[in-house]
Length: 190
Ligand code: NI
Image (tube, rainbow, N blue to C red; front, top):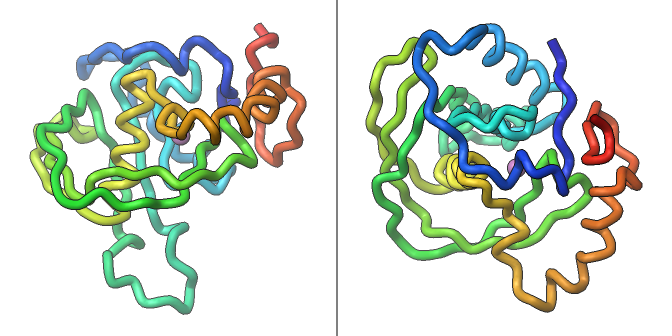
């Protein structure tokens, strides 16, 4: 089922997500719906708060980062995963800038600096515990989605100047004054 994506300005995007257990009602259907919703919106990641649920769950599929005729040095076409109750244990390496966007903040893209490597512990969709290390774009997508379940948005990292420049645009998104090709839920829509 395709779910509406919560827009910037909704308080659910500012909550720290709660851990869930394997008996969370409708968990497998919810995960399937999140993938469907993310693909429909051409995203590479989606976190549960973005579909209105303040829980520690996000999904990624970075296939969309690679063109069909492009080499896939980082293995991005095979990187499709579900992260439940994740904890980033460590972030290291040099900070690098990447132009990020977010399905909750349409038409806004900005460079964000983040460390290149992470170590993360989480449960997969079968509630098997995993511990892995990632770098490059895989780490980047995880860091962005992980922030969502901490109540953080990529725009939070921008300089005061960039924030000022974007203020009207962000306010317009919060008011629903934005044209977007996928289904969204704006703060004034209950
Ligand atoms: Ni996002």
